[in-house]
Structures are given as structure tokens and as C-alpha cells.
Image 1 (cartoon, helix red, strand yellow):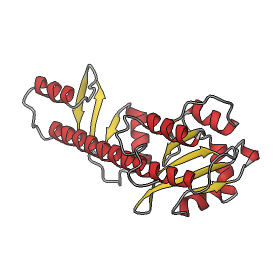
Image 2 (cartoon, rainbow, N blue to C red):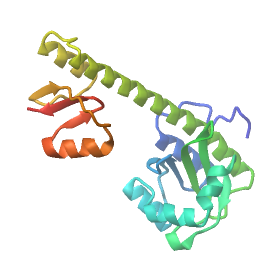
Image 3 (cartoon, rainbow, N blue to C red):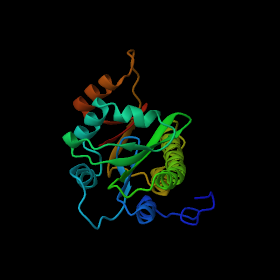
Length: 225
């Protein structure tokens, strides 16, 4: 397979579409996950799969028992340290059949994984090339999603800072910006700033939230009135 393989040198509108393309090329079932093992794409299955894949697709995430089982056997560590796709033998204890898998990384940071069910029909070399090519597409997709989320978080942070620095002179402008940035405001709310002489950690926030029913967003709070 060359870098100009027509299978992958095109735009994929979803990870489902990419998973189906890999599946069609290799005639095997495919699952694509993010770094937290949440399913972001999987191929349609025309035949029976193993229990690990079925549970993963139903729950939209790899079951903890499967992840723990693979880590206990050192398989996840092997996968995450490999620079290329690897063949993984069946782990019957967790319902996992043989797999061809790759860990997708960017500058040593794990972005996600591709898992291909290996029923014995994956041609050595060719299948690895297909998966490696697809991994590049998944990696770019996940980096783009991360960039979008970072931009969204920055937008929300800017909006809340404007609230507490008297940037808005009336409520209509607050609602206008909130609607523009797809920020859902409560029907009734108030804005408040709290100062503390203690370090504000997660434990303190949880205690305060439980006592006052307040939703924290960094140093800024919007609460139902």
C-alpha cells in the first residue's frame, strides 16, 4: 500500500465511516477508541463477535474488566510502547479474541486505539499497513477535536470573566452572548465571586457545592436563584 492509497486519501465524515473502510479492506470487524477507551467509531458487524467487543459497543466504552485483564497480562503496556501495530493473542478470561491493534500517539501522548478482530484472515504486512495508515487519520481527527474543545473552553472562560468584571451593562447582552456561544443559562440565576483564605481544591469545591447547590466554573459561579 502506498501513501496514495485511494482507500484513505479522502475525507471521512465520521470515525464510523473510517471504521467501515478499514473493515471492508480487511474483511474484519474494527473498533476505534479514544485515550479513555470510549468508542468513537466501529464497523457494522455482519457476523457474531466475541463478548469483549459486543460489551464495548453496547456500553460505548471498553469494560473495566477487559482493560484490567489486559493490563495484568502486560498487553496494554506492550501495545502502548509499540511504534507499530501488534498482534495480540486471545485473552479468554476477559472474552477477548485475537486482535491486530495499534496505539495512536502524538509526541508520546496517547490519543486512542484501533482494534481489528483477527479471525486468521489478516495478511501479515498488508493488514499492519492498513491499520497504520488509518491511525494517522484517527490521530488527526482526535487532535482536531481536542483543539476544538480547548477553543470552546477558552470561549466559556472569557464569557464568565466578562460576567464578573462588569463587561455587560444589561441582561439582554448577557443572554445574547450566551446564545451565540451555545451556553445554557438557568431561567433564574445570580453571579457571585468567592474569596477563600484556603487553597481551593476539588475537596473544598465539592463540600461547598453540596452545602449550597452551586455549580463552579473555575473561580466563577452561576447558580439557580
